[in-house]
Amino acid sequence: MLIKHLQCIDPCSSAQEAHDAVAAYWWLVHKDCGSSEHHLDHLNRLRLDAAHGWKDLDKAVCYCDGHELPAMRIYLHRDGSIVIQSLDPANLRILFTLPGRRRMEPIAVCVRPAIASLTLGPQ
Image (cartoon, rainbow, N blue to C red):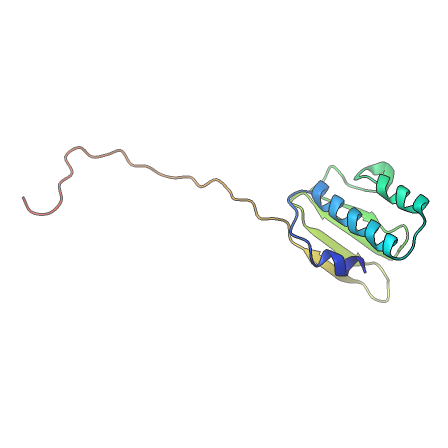
């Protein structure tokens, strides 16, 4: 159900934004399935932090293995991309991908100095 929800979101622009989106929909899935308020409060406190199971936070791609779904890994990229992978040895595959939001890169513009004696056409 998480992947169904994530298919509807706009691309994210950072790992933190991607984490927040995944966490919000993970919370919603649990709420819809009737999880206890205690469990929902626990999910609401999870952060993009090593103490909450995230690894390689200092790299371009961090990841967390599923606690409730141990055969699943979530990768978050600095650019906001999200990848969810099945770790089931009998069925290793990518379950979901969402590219990060494209950022407009500055464009270098070459401006030539004006030529004072520029003339066009016959004189």
